[in-house]
Image 1 (cartoon, rainbow, N blue to C red):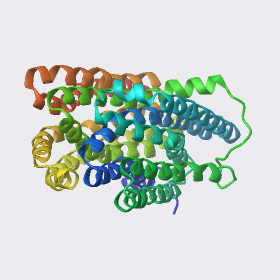
Image 2: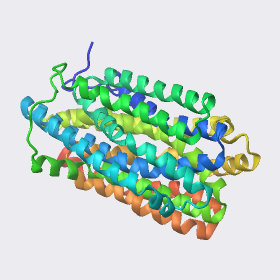
Image 3: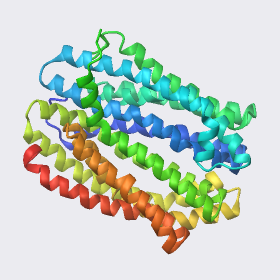
Image 4: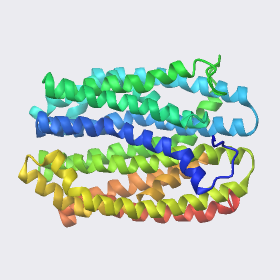
Length: 441
């Protein structure tokens, strides 16, 4: 029995509706992880460091997809809730066209100036060439990656989460198979990893274009003019997601610069492993946030405030439980995960092992801040959402990673994320309390 946006959501229905998006986000996060595994074990730790050095740039650009997807889906869902299906289709179609133009433009510029970009990110010596190779190939497929991130949200709006999951599985398996083929069999090195990811992103971004070109659901492409008002609302409403991912990219760059200064390439490699684990855990929360956002937006448009309160309370309970579970799992399996990626280098393994004991505390509360920002985006309150994202990443995390190493050295770097999340949670709680009467209480 299909779960509809207009339903009353029990825990069971909430799981059924959001699980496909959660699984999809986990599979999307596997692109980087699979690349990292094969590059680290079959090519070497310097190319592995190159992947980790360029990845913040890639994710920063891809964040435009999350911005358009989350900000735009909130607008489209609200239009559907108001009964304006044709308007919703026009808004959807216009946003996809804009995303294609934006993606191609940014990718072309980064491709041309990749050499200067990687030097700015801190690459030196042999690391420069590896970073340029991985970065330029990645730019070719980045528009498809942006589209895939956008469609992640709109498949949920179209109530086709399972189909989205199938597409993500196919794209992910394509990436895994080609990583093995290009790196382990054909010995294409770091270029092979980039080519594998490129093909996987094309699969994930191209099929939805064909799917929504036909009337397979009530959401499909129609002729649409560019409307600055809709674009502006999408940008402002989705600015929190853009801010969150861009800020995270900037913070990751600061981490790399600090680690390069203190212990060199081993530090970047170790931090890369932490990020891989974090990608998977964050994907769970982000997937739930994307999956539940259309429910919030729909009920806002329908003025069903009782259901908004129901989703709010259930989500907080789920986030509390998941934070504890993720932290425990990270402690139990950290040794195995680190062994998989850096077990070939004893010094690197020991640095990673001691650092992760501190870093893993981050998983206890980070979900509240990620979901909190997405929740206000779904409520079309882009300002509050952007503030939460800004203070969480660009303000608190950037400040922590610059100051704590001066006081505690390497341990200060590993503790930076957790300290930042604590301060960000206080801000999120203040907004939850301040806005409750307006939206969900």
